[in-house]
Image 1 (cartoon, helix red, strand yellow):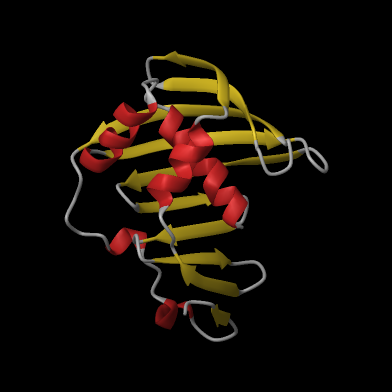
Image 2 (tube, rainbow, N blue to C red):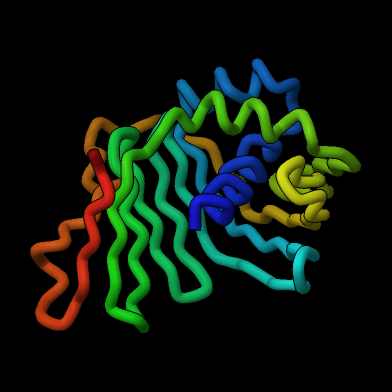
Length: 164
């Protein structure tokens, strides 16, 4: 799950078509929404797609049966089909993303769409990505959309809290 989040956030960082420091600065000042899709190649080809909202260290990804919420401190990964939730410490997304951004290449940016590839340094996985409908807006003070209320999930969900 962590790798899906990292890949998705790296794609969003590349969306501005700017240098790494400029992109990171934009994440500190704007709220970014888009639709994403990407294909991984190692160990087998897998396709992912969905919607994303990113604001600073906060993000919400939905797609492929998963919802991933992060408020900058905790990350909730919700699998509604399996009725499972994993809660983890968020880590430092900005530093992780900056590291992954340097492996991006062949980036093509046009208006509100972006495509390209990057190679994951951990396993040489080639990732082909597309971002569409990229929009920038003012950040909001209400961060509730970046948190999952596990109390409201109902019966039958298994919640595993891995925070320390």
